Length: 166
Image 1 (spheres, one colour):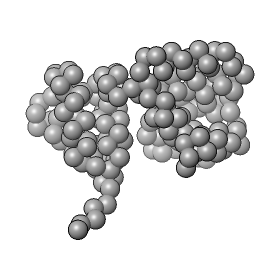
Image 2 (cartoon, rainbow, N blue to C red; image 1 turned 135 degrees about the vertical axis):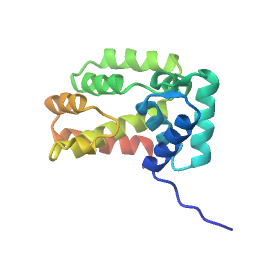
Image 3 (cartoon, rainbow, N blue to C red; image 1 turned 120 degrees about the vertical axis):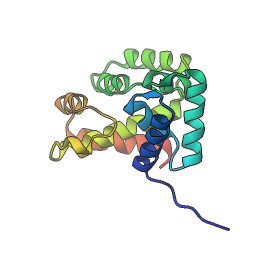
Image 4 (tube, rainbow, N blue to C red; image 1 turned 60 degrees about the vertical axis):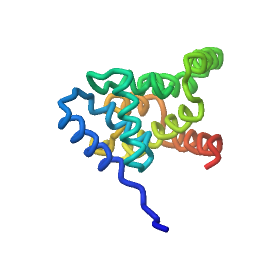
């Protein structure tokens, strides 16, 4: 029996980019990064996901396709949803989540992605170092920080972790 450790997301992403370059295919770096995250440390899984995306659109890998195929929500929508929750717009939040669900969004993945968004914003809040941003753009993180304090983000992270059973 062999116990293999998970491969770092960065290394998976780098390998996928090498594969795409060798095949002469176009790609969006964010799309490849999302595939690497979806693989959760498994190179074989990453290559399988890449293959599924290329079967959907053979000319290249694009973020909107990855999101569509795997029922993911765009970062913009996640940031908007977090802000909407804190604005106290319960009916708007329920409507938004209902639309996401009906369009095929994986709700467990959405909760996990919201948690990652909150965590990344929290980490960014201490020092505002762009190198710490993986999923968010600087302006998205700053937008959240204008609305939410680090204490509120910590509470959000706690609730989301409880929701996910972590």
